[in-house]
Structures are given as structure tokens and as C-alpha cells.
Amino acid sequence: MSNDKKLRLLVTSGDGPRECHMAVARCLRLMEREATRMGLAISVALPDDQTLNAAPDNDLSSALVTVAGEKAESFAARWLGTVRWTAPSPFRPHHKRQNWFIGVFAVETGADFPDEIDCNDLRFETFRAGGPGGQHQNTTDSAVRLTHVPSGVSVIAKDERSQHRNKQMALERLAARLYFAQAAEAKQRRMSENLLHKQVERGNPVRCFKGPDFREL
Image 1 (cartoon, helix red, strand yellow):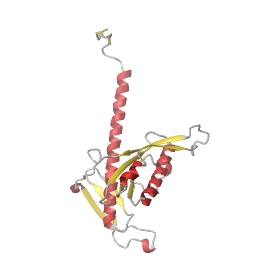
Image 2 (tube, rainbow, N blue to C red; image 1 turned 90 degrees about the vertical axis):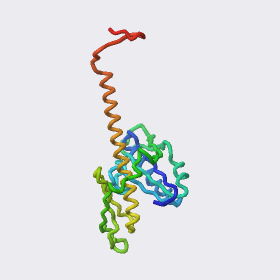
Image 3 (cartoon, rainbow, N blue to C red; image 1 turned 90 degrees about the horizontal axis):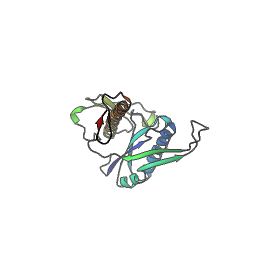
Image 4 (cartoon, one colour; image 1 turned 45 degrees about the vertical axis):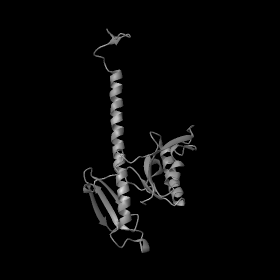
């Protein structure tokens, strides 16, 4: 990424249905076009390390967008908040609902984002990536596989012909994968806490109290 201002945005469908996943996909593609027009470097990372063009629209529940450049804050200001997509459902033709909502949130670098990854925990490997042939075919070992040894998370970057650039992209993708992993763990904890909460509400009480004086029955 550039040394200019860098911002990260989480684009998410929340718990929305497939229509919201499609809205995420469409927003991401529009973000890429807008960022390019504004002269910004942009990287889109998905939770499962798919590329944006390879992932089906109805599978994109969330993504982490990193933008860098002088106009990064202006770009972010255009997207932060709730995004509504109004359209008939492409999956349920007779469905009455036509408004689909997704959220775009700023992701702050800090305890919730593994921006400072210990270099001792990383293993870089380079290899020659096959391309479409001709002048675009890689003739050097420019593709990069990056593994975070403690977690076993591994990512590949082979989009660029420059090994240095691919290393940068791999680091961004790895940080995003670790971020998504942390978010998934946090979500699971919340689900467990909610389950416990319901069990407390519905369980058989071992003692019962009543009234403002907390009188035991």
C-alpha cells in the first residue's frame, strides 16, 4: 500500500439474507471503480481468502476494504453508514420486500485489528504463478504465500508482477483474515452468552423472590 493515509472499512450484510450479500458484492465493485477514479490504492479482502471476482455475489456476507492515498478520508466519508439497495429480490421473485440494507464501518487499527503482526510469526514463500500466457505470464518467482505460523492462517498474493507488491498485498490479506477470525470468535462468544441468557430465563429456578423487599417465597 501507499505511504499516504490508509483507512480500512468493513462492509457487512450483518445477519441479512442473500439479497444483502448481493448488495455487498455490488458495493465492493463500485468502491473499486470509485477508488481508482480518485487515484487511491484499494485492496478488498474476503473472510475465506477468495478474490472478489471469483466469489459468487450471494456469498459475500462481508469484506474488508483498505484504501490508501491523499483522498482516502473523502472516499470513506461517501460510504460510512447504512447503505440501502432497493430492488426486487433476484432470488425470490414474489417476495414483497424490496429494500435491502448493509453497513459500512470504519475499522480502527488497534487491539481489534492485528496491524502489528510479529515478523517472527510469519513465513514467506515465493513461487512462480501461472498466468494467462504471453506478456502477462510470470517469468520470475513473484507470487507470494504468507503463513501466520501460530494460527496456521495462510494467504496467497499473485496479482502483481512485483514480488514486493505481492508481499504487501499478502500482509494486508493476512491481517484481514486474522481480523475476520477474531470477529468470528467474538460472534461465537456472543451467541454462547445469548444462549446462556436464554437458559437463565427459561431454566428451573433454585430459589424464588418477590416484591421490592426481595422476599423469598
